[in-house]
Length: 97
Image 1 (cartoon, rainbow, N blue to C red):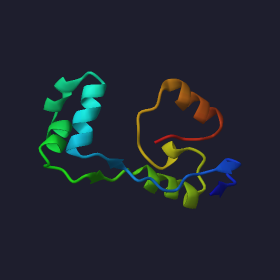
Image 2 (cartoon, one colour; image 1 turned 180 degrees about the horizontal axis):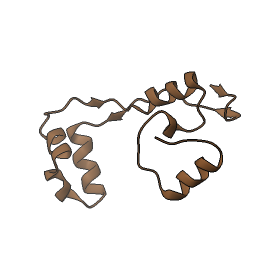
Image 3 (cartoon, one colour; image 1 turned 30 degrees about the vertical axis):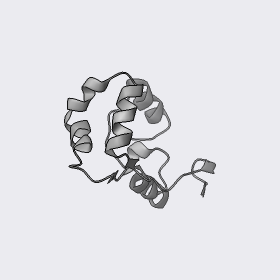
Image 4 (tube, one colour; image 1 turned 180 degrees about the vertical axis):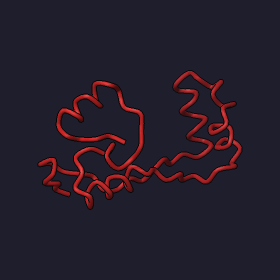
């Protein structure tokens, strides 16, 4: 959607993460980090203990940005931002959570 606060488009939806056990195993192999198969998230995917879809959340934050007319996603969701981002935002009157 066109977003007048930023004078550009704003994506309002996020499909989240979509991965199954086959895709997880393939991605770990391609990345050369098959040892990560023992990490809790990866292991649970590989053992079919998690659903194939885990929702994003960025879509919800962007909808909040849209309705609250905020310029930065950090005004509606808590996160850790590099100091230069915090300083630049503050210089523009944007208070990051």
